[in-house]
Length: 291
Length: 105
Image (tube, rainbow over all chains, first blue to last red; front, top):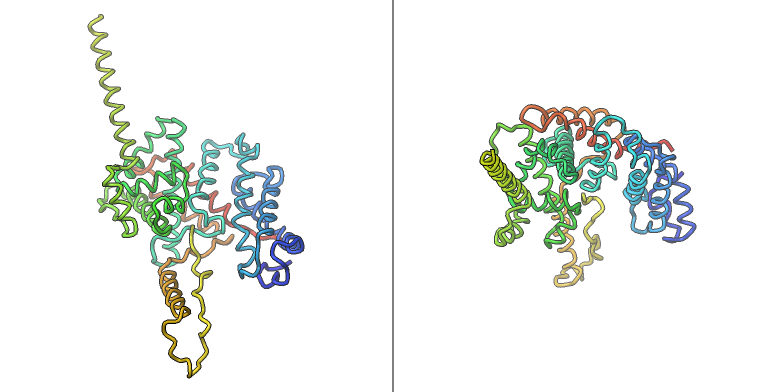
């Protein structure tokens, strides 16, 4: 079984049937390992729930497009695609749709949020923790990455509740929404695009015609900020600054009168509650008159 | 998406490593401009923060412990509601778990 380095496959022509067959033979077991890892995490059966087929499809897809002349090891090239295929199959499976294996309350929701986290942090598919927002040594870097994941998962859970129309549970997340609504409009726009509209950070950057790194790094700072606010509610903190690469976008949004979708959401909710309260008062007055 | 610095190298000029006295001054050539751009790319790349190292199966339990400890800070009194803690904490643990591949082939 090959180690997957590009040199091993240099004698093959990219895209040839011989190379595809060789790559499949060498890495089929490894692809199956990816499927098993996903199944283990989500309490599914890697074969009965079709993850093996997804992984195999991802392997074939990657093998057909792999060019050893680029010098990239095959496993580094293929891992993301195979992982994507495995998770797609998992989500399509009957077990997932029916919540099989997610017996405790909230477990199915955990699965859904877990799957969404891979969209927000695609590097996870390559076995990489999100880049740390701090540079203070290995342990602190790992904690920083974990905080990003937790803040991101909380954001996804909050919006998941809003989408389901579960107002009573969404109220429990009002602190989260309040924190996001206090952010600069450009920060709110990033969070809305990524978490509500499901855009990738690359798409957001492309729409704004700026470097993707600006959005990626700002997103990390936002999550770090959100986590700090949640973990230290009584501690005052300065507002999150906008990095230079985003300032032109922020200025444009301000000129256009953009307040931020989460600010609008809270404002709309406040207006709704005012109208509701006014309606209730009116109704009680009328009832008093009738009686 | 995290950009890997290691995969991007500045273009190597044709003259690198060669010392030819008759051609020691080669200003204004296109290849020199390419070198400058390459140097700029390298300078930009060097400012890119590298991702943390890949997660390993041996680290799984340690990562789960970190997730639990950090969740302690987020949930509870004045934080997010405890009732939601299990959902969020489990989601992150599952994501980390699904990212760690145990190669047993």
